[in-house]
Amino acid sequence: MSSISSVMYAATGQHFGTSLARSASIPEPSLLEFNLRSYLSEYTGYAKIRRAIYVGERCPALSIESYSVAFEELEEKTYDTTTYKHIAKLLEQLTGEQRDTDEWERRVSKQVKEQDTEIRGKLERAKKQVSKKDTLQAQWELVRLQQQRGLMDESVRALQDGRTSCGGMAEQAELHMEAARVSQVMGRWLQVATYIQRTESVLPDPDETVRAELAVLRAQSDFGDGKWSAAVTGLRVLSIDTASVFARKTVTPRDIALYGTLAGLAALDRDQVKQQLLDNVQFGQFLDRMPECQALLQSYYDSKYDDALNLLTRILSFCHLDPVIGPHASALKQRIRDNIVVLYIQPFVSVRMASMATALCFGSTAQLEDTLVRMIDSGLIHARIDGTTGFLIKHTVNARDAALNRVEAMHRAFAQQAELMTARIQYLEEESVRKRGARA
Image (cartoon, rainbow, N blue to C red; front, side, top):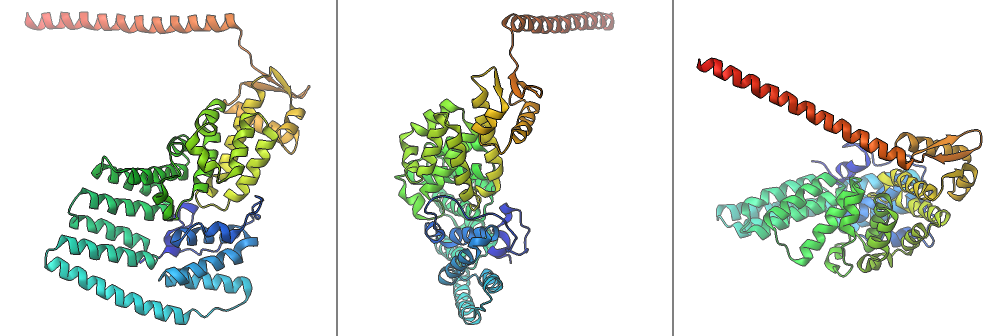
């Protein structure tokens, strides 16, 4: 069986059965008033454990504190002996202090054995009595026990086994929803999307609470897959009043603010940022929980690009420690900076690269030049670099030339259509002659 320690980090590039410990060089977040324990306290269960271990893997300065939080959560709220012992070993390596895990392991193993025997007995009796209701109830108990043990794959399989005992579509939908939640905690975004589709297939008209949770799961899945446009489309219509979604403590209002802000800056143009995020009353309630995101969006819209880039750097220093955003942090930074470069040069025919490098917080003109070369090669901007004068010069299209190009394109399209029509007529004539010959 596979425990949480070997399956929950698939999204971070780890293979099954590998060590959780990994060298990292990410510094502490530079956001004001960042407190690790306060940040992690907003989550519970394996969502909290996963985030704590993710931080410990990547930030040496916070590894002891983050692993300690994971250790405490495992001890208080789970039966996951595999991950518990592993975290204890990591803490021993970091602090030199040995932790006695034997007593807790013996006690927990005894409880697991007793509960497992009892639940499987219930399942067997319910199946003999052909009671779907009792069978489904026992199946749910088995799912919860497996989750407490960190056996996430096994819990998903148990959820799928429970479908044969469902008495209606609503019960099937709840099984699929739970499978999506488990996949969310494990960072398996393709599975999340799959189980969302299955939920909607058996429950086409869910109530408001289910609809809101599906929207959160879908948006997080899109963000985890790097689908920025789809993610921001789903996030901007969410309401902070949907308390039941956040009561599970696997995703927080602050997460929604971060996902929406970063996805929006990556996927939307300047006017769309204003309309869909800054002027959006519902999304504004999430921004109130993360003022740095509000300030970043406003600076971006107001063309205060140095402020926007400094805020972006500070926010991403925190996001590197987020298991959903972290794998995309570098790509997001490049994408957003590219968008800012495009906006900066938009009003100009030419711009001095030295001034531009200073305004956009590049370390040197050479770094800016490397970025511009990449953007020109990829077609993001249409310009050329004048190495002699140190200017970036945009390509301008003469109106007369543009009109001539359109006429030439129309002529080529007409000539191609005429050629196809001629070939079609010739084919029909030859076919007609062949049929007359066959009749004769």
